[in-house]
Image (cartoon, rainbow, N blue to C red; front, side, top):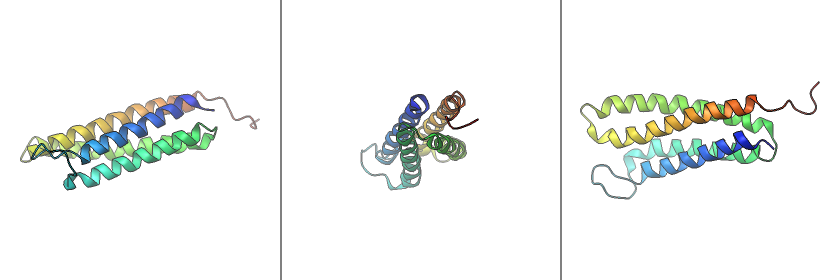
Length: 135
């Protein structure tokens, strides 16, 4: 059982799902709560990474080491995607499209969560004892 990195993956997955729901359910133009169609790409991608991380964490809790490595790759891919998107959104939010500030903030939080999870899961995987069948 690999509880430390698995718990990080589960927490990361839940955080991404919650942030994705927050991105999808708030309209920064009107301030109303409800489905915001312009944020569906970022929201669904964030939720997809969240579900993948959550699944890897749940599988890793059963003792499958490979799930931790897959979870590490999920964290790395999420970090790369969210960093690129956050960089573009932050640049655009300060200029002609200030309504993007909300999306830029939420995606930047996803990026920060991805970085923290990558570091913590990576350290947790590094500290695991070798498999019992290895020589």
